[in-house]
Image 1 (cartoon, rainbow, N blue to C red):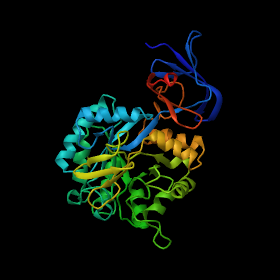
Image 2 (cartoon, one colour; image 1 turned 30 degrees about the vertical axis):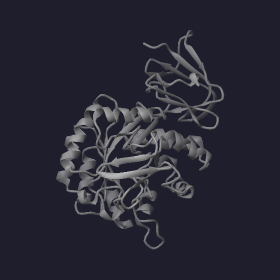
Image 3 (cartoon, one colour; image 1 turned 45 degrees about the vertical axis):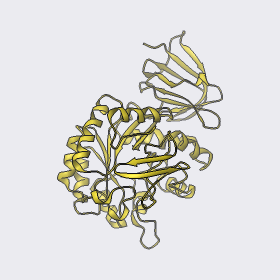
Image 4 (tube, one colour; image 1 turned 60 degrees about the vertical axis):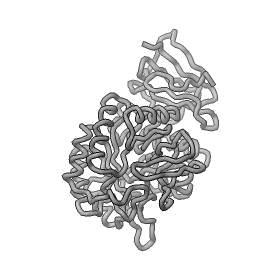
Length: 381
């Protein structure tokens, strides 16, 4: 077992607030309340220590894809995001042939059972052609509960979330089915009205997939899904805070109306995250990444992001002006709660996994620890 470590001198963000000159004791893979007198001390004066980041919605990174890649590709993407502070990641699929999605789910399920990923998110194929974004329209279909059940079964208990256009035929029944099986039903890539969205929430939908994106805009006579999702206390809203998907005013609007307890920062990352500009594939569709922005070659729609959660954190504090404690909730605690993993991750409390991120005074990433082991040691510069 690794020696006990005491991380000392940093500003530590706890569920109860920020502690100046705080201490975090790591014993083996877990956070401990106290340590032995001969514990290794790591001086982190001038830094922040926050919980490891939890990403609910991520399609890949480091040049590797979760949507169609091999197990080795998935692990490469996971490693890339760990280097940016994401200690827990859900692998997101995109629209594809049902047989292919089932096979991919089986492979991802094995990685989830090994603890490499935290489960599977199906984004499509049960979404609206009117709001398809970077999904192949020819593969879209109405959400048939029998087909939804096939994907749940293919995931061998590792399905965590499915994004649906709940206004389509079979949508509400599919939401109920997902809720019955403990899978998050997320409203997204939808052309629903305000009233249709309320019915989906009443049926059991609890997440808004990348709020504002791939749905009708907020209107003063036809408020659409955005108003319904923001105002309902049962819903957590995903936000992609990369400066491309959302104007800062839209992000602040979401925080104001939903409150910090109902926001989850996600990346919606694709292969280019942590890798660079160039030509990529997102499912069956060609994507060109230029200046860090991913767009479909045909049509120019935004195709996921190249975001990493360390950048989302830094931007939230330094550009959007959000309190650090609120950002920690959105990037760690809230997604951990949604996944049902908040007994293990999402906050710095004794008994939980020693997953944490060290940031400097400007909120740039300096260190990452996962289950008690340094992924990036802040002492090495």
